[in-house]
Every structure is written in structure tokens, then in C-alpha cells.
Length: 508
Picture (cartoon, rainbow, N blue to C red):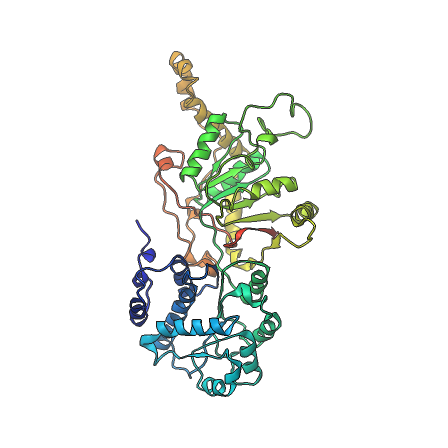
């Protein structure tokens, strides 16, 4: 079934006056950035959005801005007229374009919404008079806005509710860094913010830290989850199953044909999450290597044919390192699974305090001679996910060593039952087949269905409206019926970047 939000502007809950203006502009359907950004903005989310020039960025922030202003005036308490929205742009030309687009969209509500452009330095006197009337939306460059704030022509601390930074990647390069930092001191502590940019560079990252309070964070699409051992991969899969998050393990104990089949199903969309290690075997064991030498390893492992390299995983949106990669080279190979062929992607890595030295080696290799930081610490409010602490502890009680062992044996048993090579043997020995089919696990993982139902009060505010409870499956994922059904990726994270493979380290 097609998402109703993708059908058109009329399904976004917009004021009829805005819909009429959109119709007059000849827009029958929203662009991609408008389709994604407008519903999220209307839910009160901060946005960091990347889109090319000409893709409809201005309308992507102007439509929800006008809708929020109109809704406030129609349903909120009667308050005095004040500046509620501020739009910052790097040049006078862009200010005129933004003002023109906002006014066109507000054509049928001009009595309710007033827009002022204060970007021209030569019109200071006339701008002062306009600002005295307290327009709803003010557009301008950081230097002109700061000038009016310092002269008390403009007051935002008690009234501003929405800040838009358009063409954010150009603001610092145009020399507005100091003005912008000074300007932010005149704003209220709480407001909704949109950062719109054609690219995501270091300047935009700096602006994000300055401006956004609660940016949207959600991982969608197919994901690779890396751990360092096969035992850890089953532990993670059993843990995710407690929350009704299906995932498959790329198991090095299974034959090559089976592992290739898992990769094929992932690429075709049957699975959205694959849990893997660097040391999974994708070919026959290499003779003379890793026989009784070095640390103990999982069976049938060969680092030269690892999952992190040489495999064509299609359309991987995110790589999550639950375990820090053992070497800097392993990090590069893992990260290289996403953001391929000009597609966006992210890398999120969890690091223990004891692994700081290894993290430093990875950063040193990535930064090269420049020495510039490449791995960025991921900042989020721990209290937002505090409600999951007890659920996680409850889920981990079911992930025992015996349950992990049974899960590994279960996959091997399924492989034996469907093995073409053993088909003749089972025909000659039907009793062995019956025993294998009825051999029940002694210590299976107990799945607690209530953990998969996440009530709204447990969902962090930044994700409410985006995360939906999973529907109960009538049969487990291992059944043929469930394997045929495509599952929507329910993996949740508190990190989202649209840039191409912007690696991030989360310290815990």
C-alpha cells in the first residue's frame, strides 16, 4: 500500500489557503525533500536537510513554517503580534528569493502572515519602521539581523519559535561565523530549527552543534551490524528478537552456498538487517593458515575472505559497529559497505572507555597527514532512552549461553534437513530423519512478546510519529511464510546524517 503522504500536498494536513497557493504555483506533487521534510517539521522536529539547488528547499521549510504560524493563530490563545520566525540566508539575493517564495505561498493568508526582508543595508530606516509593526516572519543576512538586534529594532528572545538557516553550507564561507554566534545569544533557549544545505561539510556540522537542539535521528533501510565473534552475533540476534526486530546471522559454520543465499536474500530485500563478523568464510578454508596458531577463533574462519570486504551488499544505508573493529583496516572495510555509488550512508561505532587507544589508531589512519578529526562524537541525551533500561535488562535475561548454543545448533540442523547431499542418506535411514526433525532444543531463548510493543511514552520525543509498533507475526521468521514476506526495517538509532558516509563514534 502506498504511503498517503507521498500522494500529494493535500494529504499533509495543510491549511486550505496554502493548498490554494500551491495549486496556483502549479505544483501537483511535492518534491522528494518536500515530501520528507514537511511532515516531520509539522510534528515539531528539528531538521538537518540536504538537497540540491532547485529541488524545492525553500518551500520545504516555508510551507511548514506558514502552517505552524496559521495553526497557532487559529487555535492558540490570543497573544500580541510578534516575530515568530527568523530566516537566515548568506546573501541579499537569496533573501529576496526566500521572501518572494514565502509571500507567494502566503498569498491567500496575507492578512494573517506578514513577511519582512531586512537584508539590504541601505534601507535601515525603512526596515526599522517595518520591524516596529512586528511581522510574523523576518528574512535577512546574519549581519543585518544582528545589527537590528543590537539597536533594539528587533526583539526575538521572548517571541521567536522557529529558526531557519538556508544555504547553511555558505554562511561560514561568506564570513558570517562571528555574527551568527553573536546573533544566537539574542534568541530564546527553546525553538524549532531547520538547517537547509546543498552539502554537508565541516561548517554545517559546526552549525548543527550551535543551532539544533533535538535533530531528527532515525536509521531507515538496510543495515549491516558488525560484531567481532560469531558467538556475539548470535547474542545480538537473540537480543533483537526480544524486541521483534528480525535479523539474520551470516554464519561461518554454514556451507558457502547457504551463506551466499543469505546475502542474496538480503540484497533482494527479504532481510533488512544482517549481523556479521570480519572473519566469516566465503570460500573454502585456506590450507596452512590459522591451524593451531594464534588466539582461539570461531570454526571455519578466514580473514582473507571476510564479510567486510569483497562482497556486493546492495543499498546498505547504515553500518553499525557494535564491537570496535580489531584493526584500522577492518574499520575501513566495514565502512566501505555503505555510501556506495553516490548513495548516502552512515557509520555508527560504539566504543568502550578501554578501547580509546584502538580508536585513536583508527582516527590516525583516517585523518592521514591533515590531522583533521574524522570520527565525530555522537551527542544525544541519555535520559531520552532511560525508559528502555529495564526492558533491555529484561531482554538480556533470556540471552543465555545455552540459548546462544541452541540457536547455532538450530541453524545447523535446518541445513542438514535441507541438504541435497544428505537426501539419499535420509531416504535410506528415515529414522535418523525423524529423530532430527523431532529433536527439540533443551534451552531455547524465551521470547517475551510484550517487549516488542513500544508504547508512545517510551519513544523519545524526537522519534514520536516516526516509530510504529511492530505487528505480531503469526509464525516465527524461520517459517517459509515469514521468509517470503518483506519486513520493514525497524532498527532504531539516534543518529541520522544525509552526507555520504560521515563516520561517527559513539562513546559509552
